[in-house]
Length: 248
Ligand code: 6PG
Image (tube, rainbow, N blue to C red; front, side, top):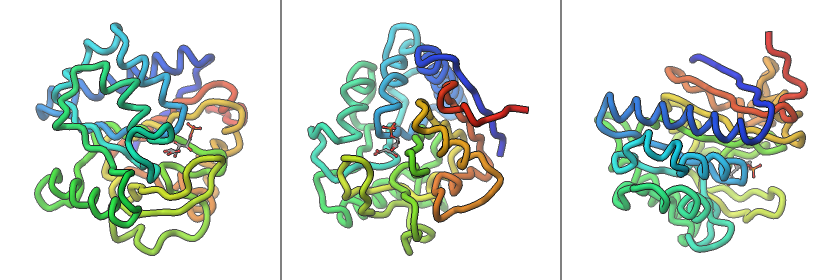
């Protein structure tokens, strides 16, 4: 596992350079295997990156018709709800690039959490390579919460099924966001080829410091559970979020 940390001086550079990094990795995957599995993050941080990817500068670098879109987590709300991670990504990115609707694999937030998790487990299994129960994500975009969560893996005792299933239902209070969610687990995330974390803003500085700390606390800092064994972790941050990070 190779780890890289980028500290960008402003949000414009952050969005532009994350888009360049993701577009390059997607194009590489398509060139190598004819398709790319792209796992999208929810929350607000990725919005500027999705806008950059859909811009003239980056849109043309990727054959979007060969990209399979997945989500790392979803709030249990309908796909047209303002809180839907699918809605944000669809409106900002997917409908602005020549994506193949048959390759848009959203988590069905309109279903009850358990039903939605089971539905997505089946979808991932149907798209998995031989011998696996989920696809290998070529690029997995992930966020970081102020409490150290990522996707919908929140601090506290781990869900008993986290080590058994690639997708689980969770209930978690975070800010004013919907509590009932569905999330991929480290089981499915840690086989990714490239995990790109998106972390900006001073409010994330402490969480980022703990995320990158050698002091392991997998229950209280869930983001530490994301360790792609054979993949790369790329941290894209801005100077305010990285104020406690000292690069050697
Ligand atoms: C969600 C996200 C979540 C998000 C972090 C950071 O559904 O809310 O998947 O894990 O990435 O909470 O969110 P912001 O980018 O809004 O700070």
